[in-house]
Length: 85
Image (cartoon, rainbow, N blue to C red; front, side, top):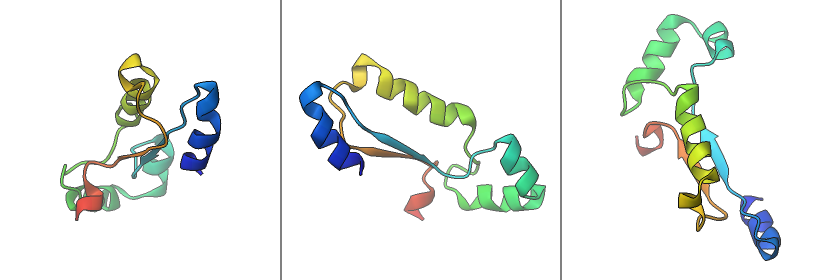
């Protein structure tokens, strides 16, 4: 869907990208998982931690900046490398 929208909207100079965060330490996540589950999940990640809201926000801020002007139709995984294992 991201790529289709990017193709359709590029004629209007509109960029379409998506951001896919992995488990992020939000208040809801802290309520939904035990501290032990959070630690176990973090240890499976190459970064040895879970995402923070700021991690995802920083990617979004980058995509909104002029430095990302040539990025279109992409999905950026914000996951500390969990998809590598």
